[in-house]
Length: 128
Image (cartoon, rainbow, N blue to C red; front, side, top):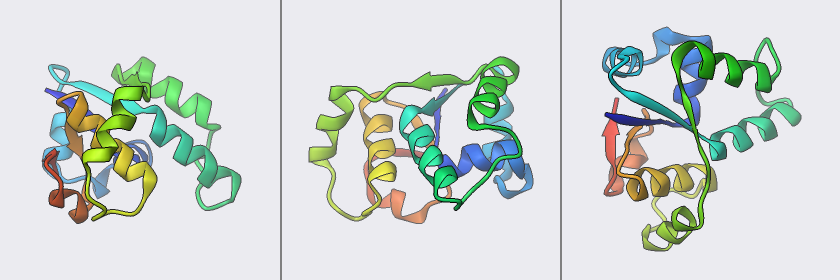
């Protein structure tokens, strides 16, 4: 499976794994699955770090590079196709980063790992 972590799933994977559902933890841990982290999530995290709404113990660059090295996470860039996918999405969810993650998962045929209940209002494959 190709899994796309939402921002909170990535945070919980790196800082508080007990907050992940058992299924999410199992599938992220499964080496047969490819796990992706969107550049949109990194953008969101960088903003939260800069305005002191969130902090990792290490700089974001180190945290992300460790997850790439240790767990084989792959970065998913934001493409024009992802932006165009947004046009098809109704405004159930107002957060632009979450909407972009939904659009990416749909466009790339990935399973979005998220506990956000609003995501189920969209035609996206979810795992939690």
